[in-house]
Amino acid sequence: MKKEEAITEGILSHVGGADNISSLTNCMTRVRLNVVDYEKVNIDELRALDGVMGVVEDETLQIVVGPGTATSVAQLLSEKTGLKAGEAKNDDHTAEDVRAGIKQKQNRPIQNFLKRIGSIFIPLIPALVASGLINGGASFAENAGVDPETTWLQILLVIGSGIFTFLGILVGWNTAKEFGGTPALGAIAGILIINPALEDITLFGEQLVAGQGGIFAVLLAAWVMAVVERTVRKGIPAALDIIITPFITVLVVGVATIVVLQPIGGFVADIVMIGINGVLDIGGAVAGAVLAGTFLPLVMVGMHHGLTPIHLEFIDSQGATPLLAILAMAGAGQVGAAIAVFVKTKNEKLKTNVKGALPVGFLGIGEPLLYGVTLPLGRPFLTACLGASVGGAFQALMGTAALGIGVSGLSLIPLIDDGQYLSYFLGLVISYFFGFLFTYLFGYKEEMAENIK
Image (cartoon, rainbow, N blue to C red; front, side, top):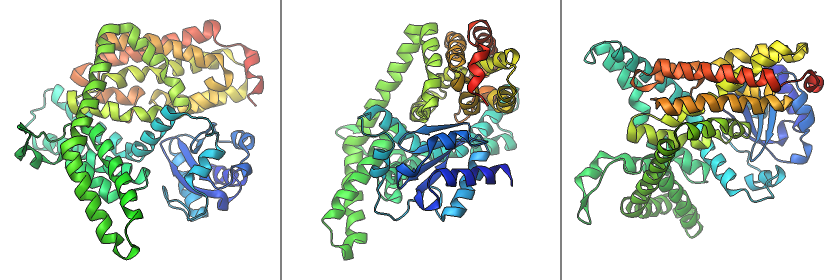
């Protein structure tokens, strides 16, 4: 039996079978499940499965299996359950039932908000990665002296920039879908924000600006679109729903978007950008150290995707995101910590975990190291964060920024802005070194590996 098939069978066995899965999807490294009856889920057995690096209990059940494997396992689960990715089973159990079963009784509004944001952007990551790398390669060629009027370079820029030009449409679609609205109406909200025809309109003595508020405005408008649609539908007879509900929704929210929601989105975007730039300008190295050193805990609980709209707003408004270059040091610190563990330990299982996870760790995919090495050991997780802090401080001092998102580690080098490839690489090396040093000196003792079997 292939590795992916064995993992799939194990997951089905320990989540209560195919009938107990109400919806499924995946990101780069995780299979994300909603279940009908959480009492049937055996978390300990899931964690013990060969090939499973960790399990995160949250709004969705997140099973970490690593890059590539996550996609294959999700496809196999889809075949066995009859559910398509992102499709919910027609069942009396709702998403609220699932959340209640997975420790959602306590009020965690900020975490839940970031999870929602993550659910909107996770499906877009492959497209963002591909486009970002193409854009980065084209920028690298320009910096190397290639004439920007060269046809092949112009073609690459058209391919690479497409998603960033029309990203609002995709974000609007996913936002409406996430909040229970019709995706196509959410896409209309995105179109309203980025439509160049806005610049032909003067409202209250001011010429409108296409794209004002960026991703924040799209998120707000698409969310309101979903809320209004659900509200209007309650008062419309079923026979007229397909005509009246979308008509009223688009008309009302369309006007509200242009008059109110887009300016609000612009205000929020400005505040966020000014705030983060201010923190980096005033805090400098200290701010970079804090941001990089606290990022791994966000990855641990799957909340890191909630920062995606901030990165995208930086790219849209300033051309590059300085935040990503700093946060990328978190993965590098963990790589250094894992190498130190490998050097010191005599535990063969632990050595195998490190060897299997290091290659993708260097490429910026940190979950295999996180759940297979540093987090189970405890202290190496903290020393990895400390190593990341040193690299984050360096990146903040150098002002390094990225042209795209979706990748990290060595993979991010082609996307670094303004030719600062060496500065970014040196930051990685610094994080590797200090992650290794802190872990080697006081982050690991052999007795920590007793539970790694």
